[in-house]
Image (spheres, rainbow over the protein chains, first blue to last red):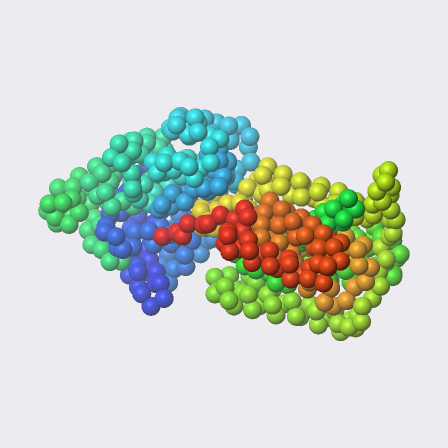
Length: 236
Length: 287
């Protein structure tokens, strides 16, 4: 059963057609990766799903509801969260205040405490740094904070945009193993990633995006072994 | 000593107005040049209610309600449709709203200044020094409001959402924050502070006219820029600093005619040395 379904999505930036009719689906419990080069339109698709930018055409269905024109902030309490590209944590607030904001739409104190414990168990370093101003964290720690913030809304579906961007290989491994863990605990994941090898290695299925169109799809393993994908995205 | 208290009290009025500018700028990224005129409308609300009821309490409450609602309505009608438009369009609109409010006041009340006496408080003596009680009350109430506002922004959910919206609107939406609501709340708070400013300003000048808001508006805007626009403590410091400078200059006969020139001169100096204002930070451009 598809928990998230995108049909014939078209997005324009002025005269530029960024997304030219893209359809795909994400089933409950899966990790689905969107891979593609810079400028292929991966981020645009995630922004369109989250309601951050207007869509020219197409529909987005989430849990059986049409969310094509739902405002971004209304999707969070429905369990559709996004960790945006470049982390976009609130630099002036402390680590803890950032995490708190992740629970903005929630109201239950006990539920809140449990969630905080849970994200601290994923990322113990954040507990140590809870009083630190978020802008002073390293890139990897900021990525952890951005993920924690999104997890605080108890997402059913988590959209992750370039979680490995700008991180050292060590952090990339940590982040990816936590993505797998989050997925095992019941969260469906849609992952945008330039690091195709890494993304395909954890993805159940993947779509290859080229200049606004999906050109290929398959299981993570199929694509890892595909000659064209190898040539274009895995460095031969 | 009494000059210092007068300066602090005038400064805290500037600070109240500057907070309105700075909060709206921080969150909506726009300069609300109609802010001074909201004070003027507040002053006319005080004038009308004093004439109708004679009760300062009723008048003050009316002014607060009128200003707060006016702030929300202006944002909804004039600024909200321009969200995402070029900053210049928004700026021109704000100036337009400013003239609109002044003209409306002039049509209803005429161009002449109207006397308003809310209440007179007299003076108190501490040993040798005589202090104006209204200056003391102004100072104390403004201090309470500023502490309250700081706590509100630091410690409440809405306050943190305001910080989040001011930093990154899209990321705030991804936390489930309704950005439009937060902007409305910000306008409401700023305009409510303008009502308080109207009360204290009238205690000092005892008359209202359609252009009442222009000068304190410009001075407070200067204060906000001196403090670093967008920064709440910056607005407070900038306001107090400007008030002190103004009263100190006025108390020295030789400097008194140049008061305003000195104030803006100091603005220019501060901006030359620190272009972002005293507490302003450079925001990194997002790529």
